[in-house]
Image (cartoon, rainbow, N blue to C red; front, top):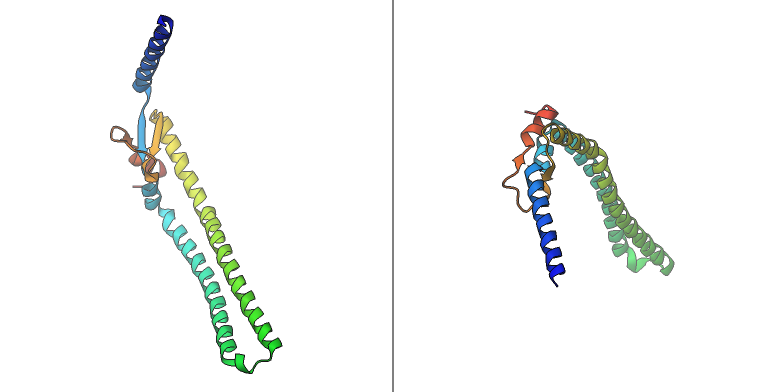
Length: 171
């Protein structure tokens, strides 16, 4: 029993000493990645390009929706005078068009997300490299991104946003 108590005491002491030593050498910083991305000059042009692409996809979707509404209206207006074969054909056309619209919507959402990644990933990589350079230059052990909400407490850390802005040449 005494051996277990001694082992626990020794282990506790080792943890205490190692955590004390770690806290003395660790340097923590924080940054809001959303803020730095928001003030970068490239962000506006990338957002405009993404918005233009989203508008183009919306136009395509609206054209399909207008075609669908026109087909439904035509079907409703002429259903009473149509033969069974024509009615079934028109219903199939409407159903197929509705399926294409839904498939286009899903594909457009994925395509827009891919376009956003294509446009913004180089900018995000540029910021990440600047943060890494600031961390190395200023001997930071950790830099937390408070923009993601992953940090619960950061009061005693240094905000490295000004250093990253300087590294990127942003005022």
